[in-house]
Image 1 (cartoon, rainbow, N blue to C red):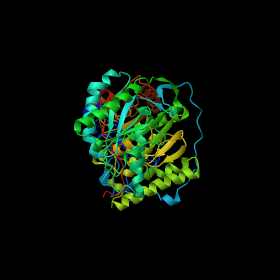
Image 2 (image 1 turned 90 degrees about the vertical axis):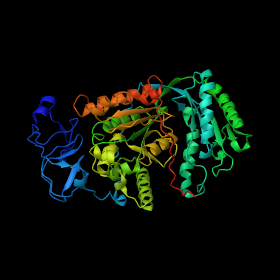
Image 3 (image 1 turned 60 degrees about the vertical axis):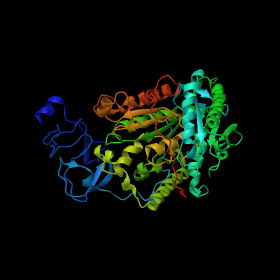
Image 4 (image 1 turned 180 degrees about the vertical axis):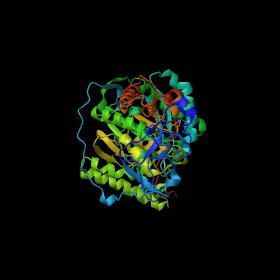
Length: 511
């Protein structure tokens, strides 16, 4: 073993399953050639942090096993102690969707978790908001510049008069015109916008700004029976009138929103979204399992929990369909996978387009390894239902909400499904945030948490070094979710005002 390494820290690797023939290096900065582990394993070459080391000699085409599952096959002979990176691993075929087991291993419901509540804003329709926001929707991207200008003035001139209102945000997007509005798959962006406009954090106040000639009629975003105001810019006699009209309509709503008060609500009113971005090889070892533990606690407390990202589920779908509460839910899972397989084929792409270069730098060899780590966020609860992209959640328990893996699109679709808080795990790091709801950032490794102490909310990296357990971090995340949802604590993204733009998923043609 290198003397410097010996003086600084003991060399560590993590093997997750007795079947595994690879392990990942834990030490920050990686380990040099010649490092000797107590078990007798010696590194034949330097191996970076989070990357895989061969625990046995592997022949060409021999399975490479992590999480107890085959993540690929050896491209060439690999000696024990060698570095296994993406160039060493041949991608296996995906699970056959027509041969999957359905609802044959449904987990037993865990005992209810009682005694927990949150402080939220009860809406007239019975839903609960966890923030008090005026959201101004748009029916077409053309109006974004005018609305942004108006929102700047609303925040500067009007919002200070209404201290109980958290924020005013513009729901801008790139949709609304120049699109095949009647194409079958146009239902996805349209229902996404409809559901965003009625998010519970907006308190039932629906204000829509349109242009007047767009294909997506503003009235289509108004829910049946809702009291909404639609402002058409083409009806206004100039820019100043546009801005003043928006500001006047906003102030009416701010006055009503300012009367909202937090009240004690059961956890059954809470909807939590789970997502990962900038993933690395630690994601499936530390942060995602801890989030999965928190997800189980939320389900036991009666909440709704959404996990997503089709391409980061597809290669592990055989581990999920047995957990479906019934065959109908299992078939719905399969249908979402088939839809996305077809979608990728139309674009002449395949699942090898995921992972990203940063994922590979963090030790993930391919999408199979990424998927096996990603689904750890779902915990161990039964999968109660499946949501198509952008559909609102109406059921309690663990739900699969189908979305692309893109952080921005997944976040937008989960917002449309009604999440109040998003839990976002990251190994490489990202300042990602959402304006409509808080984002709790969970680091997969100590080195990231130390590098970004003012962006990371929870450090799950302590699990890898033995300083904490999955259960302890899971409880920490669970309690933080309730505190953040109740307004008792802020996430770092909230503190800095960080948020990404809404990004609709539109698989329909653009004309």
